[in-house]
Amino acid sequence: MSELSQYGVFFDEIDKMCILEPTNYKQTTNLKEESFIYVEKIDEFQKIADKFISTVQNLGEKIEVQKIKAIGARNLLQLMEKQKENNQQQMRAIVKEVSMEVERLRVQLHSLQKTEAQQTDFLSQMKHN
Image 1 (cartoon, rainbow, N blue to C red):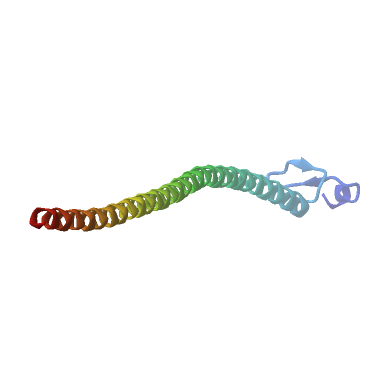
Image 2: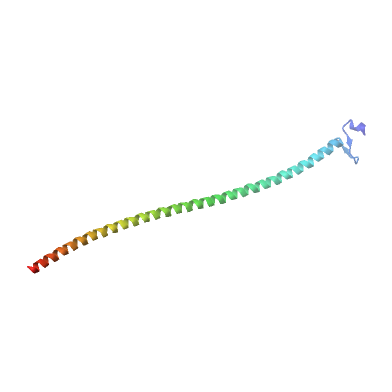
């Protein structure tokens, strides 16, 4: 056997002819098996990473939808606040107009009451004369 090993021919434990030394062959076989296991783990990791990325993207899309809804709700609330403020201003203007009309009518009433009193006095003076 050792004569053949000089020429690069070796025999393993079951006397099978090999080109590599039995220890190198065993290490190569182990490395091949470990490489296969490593590739399987990398593939599994890639699948997990793809699933994670997909989940994160879906969540991102859902967040964007909720964000747009929140912005819409905020804009609607701001619009409602502006409408409320405009309505309050209109009501204040109406109250001011009505108050001015009441004041004008009060002054007119006072004036008419004064005129009535003067005319009553005049009529009473005319009756007595």
